[in-house]
Image (cartoon, rainbow over all chains, first blue to last red; front, side):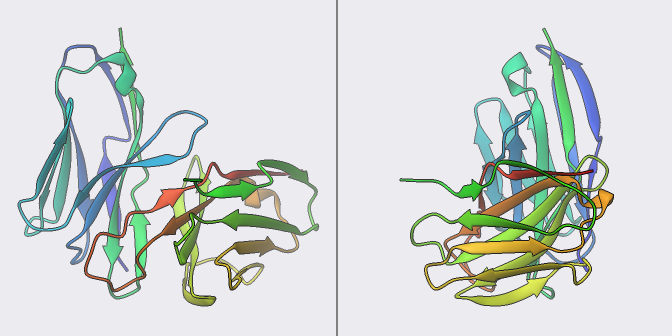
Length: 111
Length: 117
């Protein structure tokens, strides 16, 4: 069964700094998704990565996928307080036909 | 257009009782998935329905069950509640079913927060 691991699980950073969240997955999964969850809210889709080398960017967030390394990254550039949230990556397990989520990275950006 | 609607939003039950949660997907979405979210375990897959058929099930005991109706609305039921069932139950719908070649983006509802006393 596909396993998805994120790190770090908690991240506190200063505004204006750059940082990267890592998402490793255990078996073949050519589709990788990133979601955001604000406190007390539900999950919202951020990025969909469908092929090796895919890169998507929106604002200060950029996601990439390396299927050979089974790694996706979410890079935050010049963080601002509004980006404080929990970020989840998720992969599709084709054998089991499930979408499996990582445990999430709780990001807290200090003003 | 209306999003994914889950009811009830909050509920409190006692051990041994049962609970039914409801989910109305986005119009036109035929796939409905359920997840359990807890602080320690994150989001764990419960099951997925497509066109009234359960296509897959996660590693949960048989006390957890679900169904989907012809209008794609889905319900999940938990019987003989235990303290550990306290969680946020999230429903998500998607346009595409499993095995499709396109992106399978999930649209989540606000969740039903269940507290078991």
